[in-house]
Image (cartoon, rainbow, N blue to C red; front, side, top):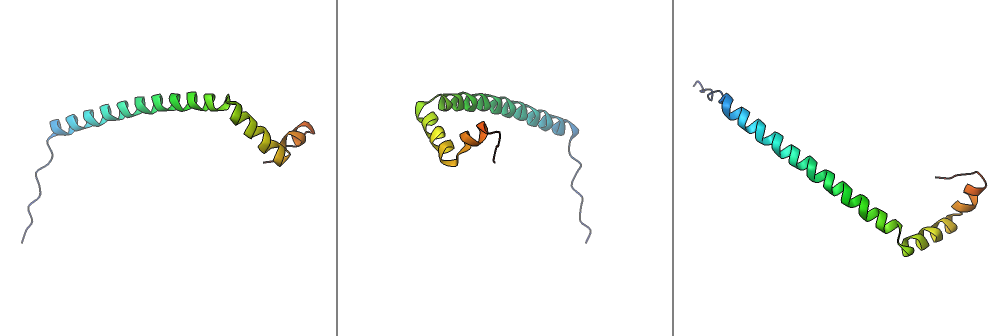
Length: 76
């Protein structure tokens, strides 16, 4: 009842797979960078929106953040 060991993996095949994985990782990193830039652009547009500024001002007023900041007290 001896079990046979599988043959060792071919070194050339290992190198090919490693190169393929590295290429996939490089592409994923590039896509993440593009998405990060798009998110930053969208956030900039949102922040410049009059509706966003109105809601932010209203929220700060509700939480009395502006008056406390001007008094030198900041809460989190």
